Length: 345
Image 1 (cartoon, rainbow, N blue to C red):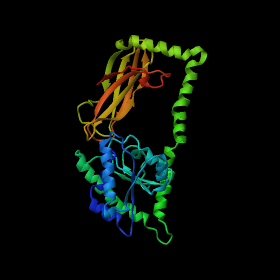
Image 2 (image 1 turned 135 degrees about the vertical axis):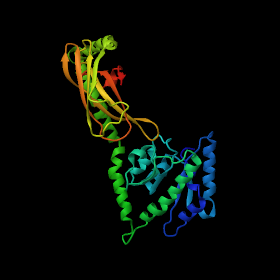
Image 3 (image 1 turned 90 degrees about the horizontal axis):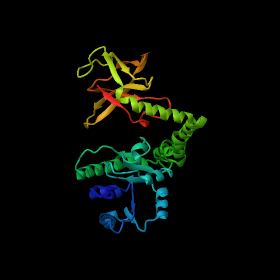
Image 4 (image 1 turned 45 degrees about the vertical axis):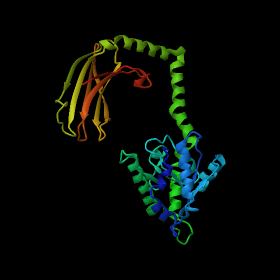
């Protein structure tokens, strides 16, 4: 299964050394249920139980039966580490890790799901986000070895560095950092605050804006959209000027280039926006956005509008430059609210 509960058993000899270290004893708790038709899940539980009964793992690997909400509640408040090992990138969220966070439990997980956003150095532990191998078996072996190493060299030494006080000050520091820097981002208060500030408040303001004076602005916006639809295809690029050729050639990093467009808006009267869009191809061969630079409308003469941009590329590399024209209006919430755009190079 994608949760990879078997990962800890990849190297049983190494695992046995970890759990039987007299100076740093450790115990792994497993629990869960498999659906009656989930054969793989049932087989996994059988394997965990079988391993837990081996002499070297008695009392060290424990499977807790009859998993339910009460048992889950005791677990999320009673363990020291929450180990989660999903297959990248299949973890949708991982809410159990968020629950233990509120109870002073430290997370040790793959950088996937919520932990990809939540992880902070010094407030838990993480396996890298990226896969090194396409072959899942090879990736599992690497991840298992990484888990063993982090347990041996970081987690257990820190937990048992108790000194004369009887507890690990470093461990408590991690817990405090986890609660102070991660936990506030995973509360219902934060969620409700986000909904209120990002959506509800903005929608309420927009409602009052558009509905005032017998929906005057809503009606005006609708008429404007109809006019744009009618005239969009007739909008004409009259001229295009640039200080130097900047397409398919090497340009100097940090050098400024002047670009000018004259566009006949066909009577739309300052209803057109113009942007220069720069993209690049990353190491995985995907096209990524580098920057979006808006043109400034500097002159208006009859239906002709002059747009100018001073463009400077500050980084070295191979880039693709394109221009896009789109309708603009002060009462549009976003340019994607009106599905018209024209690209040109």
